[in-house]
Length: 519
Image (cartoon, rainbow, N blue to C red; front, side, top):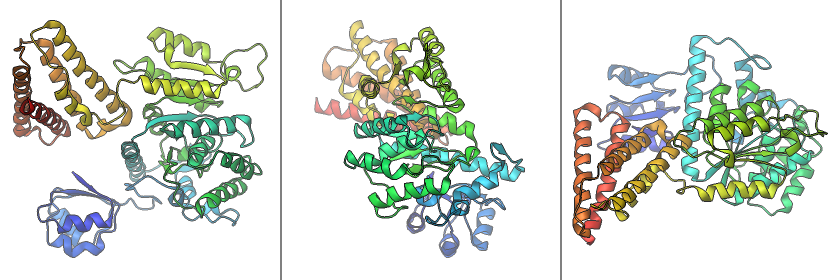
């Protein structure tokens, strides 16, 4: 279904003569009442939209799906996009002490929490509103990752680490270097080492010396608990480099912060260009780990960081056919037992983590180091070793028509099947890590590839002449396509999985057909 998130798209939809149903997200549609009166709303969905009374009555009469805003909530249930510094800090005024309390961010925090770390008891309507908001945020993250097109590397670490700590600089440098090498930096979006990583990505488009300048500007307010000074200094860095404190980040410095209002007493840092803030921390934590396709770097941290380490280890442990993602523990003495630990907060969990990795064969994806260059090269080497570039699965399917074809020779047939299975593994990895499976189309791509791999495994003999080989595989792909189209026509077409099967097979068939004509 077409998703409409701004007024320009509303006008385009209303002007189209043969438009289908659409999903409208958090829009004021009252000015478009006459346009809706001239068309039908049947099959449409209106999510947290403001409707003119006549449009609302029309939508109900025509069976449209309407979700109205819950009373008393300070947020949109279906935000159309992720947050930015300007939107999350709407209402905040630099230079006015205590104005964070007037921001959108703090209003949501007060609504959700009874006291620090204790959410208040929500009624059913409020709980649904919060969960709908988080679902919209989850989808916003998926859209951003697809649009960005970079392999994501997450940084996890303590929220309470001072801006003046050596580890703060180290994390900022490493994040800046990885961003410049083409990675997307993701953090938990809060202060401490999360801020350091977002700061590194923010500064990536600028000259190296800007990091020292920024650290000097931030140094007078090292602790987020002095919130006015902490925010003021960050605003000063942004204003100096961007013109105003709430301007969009430099196009060359995108990064993602994923904070939570469960820890809403910690202000979100101002250096993430895209912010997806969640009410429910469990959903946020799972998303942080799952989308980090390029690996996770764990700097010194507390219980939350320890939780994230073992959450990541659990995914690598039970990964099935998926390739493990890199895990870098930054700080030998912090994460490993030493005779004279320098830090009383050290957490020597590395031996247990190494044991888990050895049990399930992902020890080569594990690195314990103090060396920033070694950490950087470890992440880069893992990305280079990946079987395919990170792209949506359906973009690489047509390549199959230009490569290995099955023949009556068993070795050649096995090679053809291995090629298809390579695409299959890549499609599954993308579905799992990028979140493409949320819309079902990636699931359809995977199912279609399983079908092709199974047919190749059956290995019916094919003629050895190149043209006849290509024609034969064209026939068998066409047969699979015809069957999928018949199933869709029999009532499965409403599911995006069925659409995904047909779309990927049509792309494959077109590529094969073009190749046959060239022969």
